[in-house]
Amino acid sequence: MGVNMLNIGAVERETGIGKDTLRVWERRYGFPVPVRDEREDRLYPEEQVDCLRLIKRLIDMGLRPVKVVGQTYPALVALLEDAVGRHPDDQPELQKYVQLIKGHQASELRLALSRALLDQGMTEYLSKTVAPLGHLIGESWLRGDIRVFEEHLYSEQVTLVLRSAIEMMRNDRGTPHVLLATLPGEEHMLGLLMVEATLSLQGARCTMLGGQSPINEIVAAAIAHQADVVALSFSAVMTPLQIKDGLQQLRRVLPQRILIWAGGTGVARRRSQDEGVQLIGSLSDLINAAAEWTKNESPT
Image 1 (cartoon, rainbow, N blue to C red):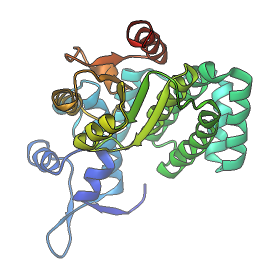
Image 2 (image 1 turned 180 degrees about the vertical axis):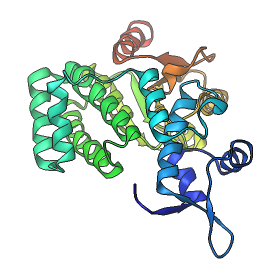
Image 3 (image 1 turned 120 degrees about the vertical axis):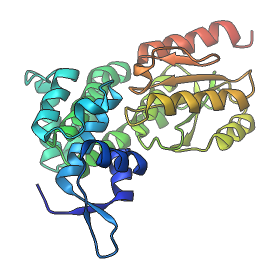
C-alpha cells in the first residue's frame, strides 16, 4: 500500500460514497479514520480508500453497512468473493487479455480484441468477450489486482475497436431511432457503447448523446432528434435509489411517445419495474426489444 492521502472530495469521487455518509460512518463505526491537515481538513490514507471501494460495492450488492464498515481489507475481499463468486483460472480466452492489460501493451491488446471481433462476430463478441472481460477486470480492480490506469487502458482499447465497427454498421435511416445517454453520476460509457453496437447490428439508427447528461438535455435532444427510444446504461456505481429517481424524473418530463430502455449491471439489482420504463437485463433482451418495436410501431 502507498502513502498517498486524499481529501474528502476526492474520496467521494473515487468511491461514490457521499461526504455526509463518510462522516456518519466515522462517528458510528469508527471508520474511516482520517488524519487532519494544518487546516483541520480530513485526509484519508490510500489503504482506507481501497477498503471504502470494496465497502461501496458490497453495500450496492445488498449488505448492510453495519456488516462491512470497519472490516479489514482481506475480510472485505472474502465477502466480495462470497457474494460474486470466485473467478476461475480456466478462462484462457480472457486471461490472455488480462496479461496484456497488466503488461501495459495497448497496441497488442487492441489487435487481440479486433481479431476476436472478426472471429466471433459482434453478437458473440459482446456476450462472450467484452461483457465477461469487463466483469473480470472490474472485480480485479476492486480486489486490487488491477490498477485504475490499467482498467482505463482496457476501456480505451475496446472503445476504439467498437467505435470502428459501429461506424461500418451505421444506418442513418434505420429504425427505431435510439438516443443513448447516461445520467449525471454515471461515468461508465462502455455499457452504452455495447448497446449502440447491438442496436446498430439490428438496423437501428443510434445517436450518442454521451455520459452524465442532465435530464433536461436528454429530453431536449430526444425531441430535437425525433427519437423513438431513449436508452440509458447504469453500472454498479449507481445506487438503486439514484436509478429509480433518475428514471422516474425522466419519465415524467419525456414525451410519452418516446420509450425508455434501461439496462446495465445497476439495473440488474432492481427488484421492481418502473412504470413507463422497460428494463433490459441482457443484450438478448435488447435485441428482443428492438424487434418488438419494429413489429408494433414501425410504420407500415
